[in-house]
Length: 104
Image 1: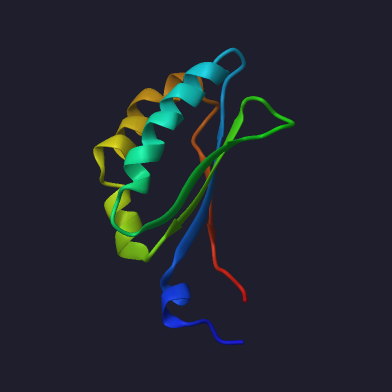
Image 2: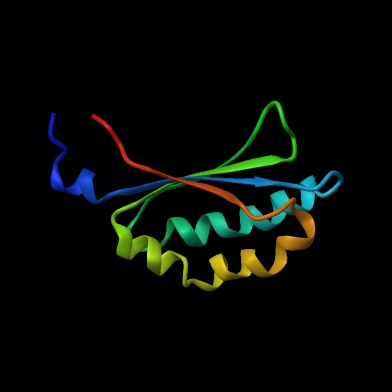
């Protein structure tokens, strides 16, 4: 089955952030601050924050962007850049990001 043009251009991401032990609430607070402004961006189709039920320190963003330009614009926003400034002392390494291609 062939994807329609809008689905083919979508960028789907899963971003996983691991909090250091004892920093779970700080990470949750920081990540939550990015949710609403990200959802309000042009081209944001989904931006959902989850916490792993089996790993309290693991946080997962599920994102969908209209296209590569929308994602690039998101990565230049103040709220996205702030994550890179304030998260490092609270997390174990950089986020693990999966860029997904949808199969229908």
